[in-house]
Length: 61
Image 1 (cartoon, helix red, strand yellow):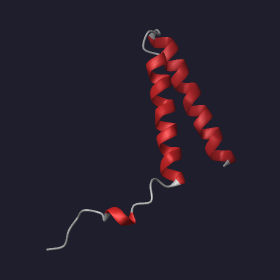
Image 2: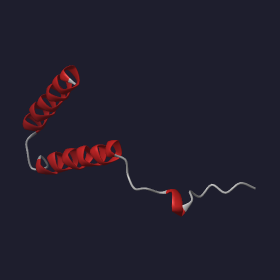
Image 3: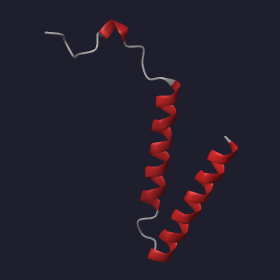
């Protein structure tokens, strides 16, 4: 039966895309944590700004 474990000698660490995704995820988690004490309206406004910023980022990149 074939082994499903990756070979330890083939692992070169995370790719730059993986590292970028992890940093983006961490940034999003920190923003979410910072909003925990905010009112519902403030959270909705911040979420809308996040969406608009992400759309602008996708359009330019």
